[in-house]
Length: 170
Image 1 (cartoon, rainbow, N blue to C red):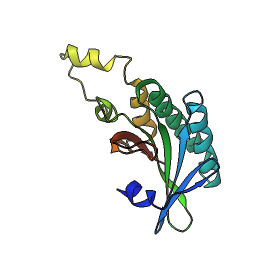
Image 2: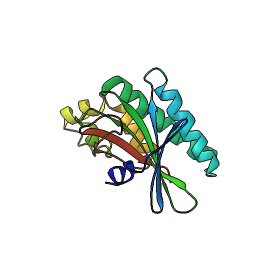
Image 3: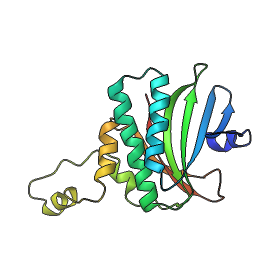
């Protein structure tokens, strides 16, 4: 994966680490649990405003970043990292992910998919859709038009397999 390839070329700088191979560059920030949501919003807003993304898109994607950071603080195992992948010579931000050291994906991949079309007679399925658990991930799916995913990864600051939940910034 790209993260493993670029990790060997990590350059630490204030506010994060920068990694790069060919036309790809990535920035990595450790998110402190007490400030994770706010910091995730600030980073995404700054990057997207600099890239010229319209305000509506900026608002939606900073909300997505904050939701994933909040989920990481509440449900995951530290460290929590925010990683943004940039592409091309203009270094346009194209993908953002929140990574942690907990490898358990649980229902996260399912919650990032579109909700099922329900048959009015399937009471169990209807009750599942009304659950308060996972509503934030449904919002992530909606605000990113489905351009989101959960997958195994590693963090730069802790060995072993963890997970990441990422979304498109395009």
